[in-house]
Amino acid sequence: MSTGSVSRILYCCGCTRDVQARLTDGREVYPHRADLFSLPFWKCDTCGNYVGCHHKTTDRTRPLGNIPTKELKNARQHIHRILDPIWKEGKMPRGKVYATLAKELGLKEYHTAEIRTVDEARRVYAIVKGLAA
Image: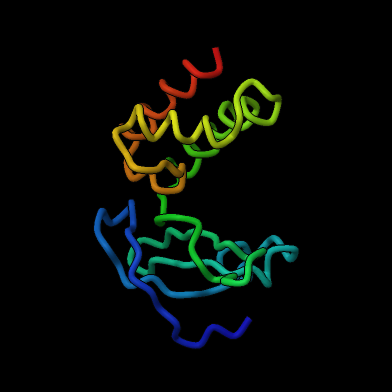
């Protein structure tokens, strides 16, 4: 992927502010994973954190959310390990799961990739655990 000097303003959880993120590819962020080399990523050059993109859509460089720290990335993945089975196993429709989370969090809509802090992740985790129970 030739990205040149494409940049975009994104919130970086490591820097705790909006940053000028740089479009790069998997060759840079996952040099040991040849299967990811052609995928687009947005990287914060200040702290080195990055976020993937909606690469399977027509807007393949649209970021999946804000740029998480490694700790937040792990927390988000942990949330999804509990959240996804709720709708995948038919306990509750997917839309209702996300609408319930948004309502509980006082948001118009919810997306895990927008979690900015560990405290937010803990709050979401507690709600998700309740839905899964």
